[in-house]
Image (cartoon, rainbow, N blue to C red; front, side, top):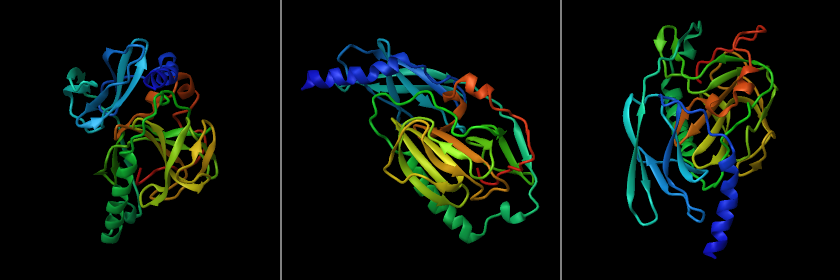
Length: 296
């Protein structure tokens, strides 16, 4: 039985050996790839952790690679990923995180209700956060998770980039932990890779929201949707329509907010998208669609 399982695992990881890794940038909000020990033909992947959270491990050629998401609020400095082998022995692999200055975005909102929350709204937000964190903490043992993602919508333009330091009416807010793709309401939203639907919920800030689980802590999130085309537990294929874009939640115009989560950290989605695909998306406004978001 052990031999059969080893052969199956080797077959599954062959695809990982051939595919490209994410674009690595060891900065807050980036993805870092750390080489671990040697991967023999019949060996199972080691267990690896970063800051007490399990991280993705994939096989590339004859090495195990830890693929780690770095939180936007992570301080620059030296860190370690801990590898635990089957015999219980542990090994530390150091890497260094450098600072990155993201640009600032100032948004003026005449409606003060879009800036300051009431007590009831705050209570709902805290309830939402608990549910969102449960989705972000999902771990499924997929041997070959996708390391290249497609853009979830076709057409449109990038109205807000990842990592923007955001100010609403000059008041600082959390950095923008995703990218905003400005598209009209009703634009098909497609799965960027195969996965399983974790949640389809309506949240205060992000409106109608979908979480997809792609395996080993890689989760994608789609916000402000007008319509769901899938339900929790459903397996979806790459390119399948999962929803339609909208303007639900705390927004002032239609767009899709897309986040990528890796080991609970919100990371730059473009690390997983080919340069060719990103080059095809304008970063300026080709049409008069107002897309400022007060929530995501």
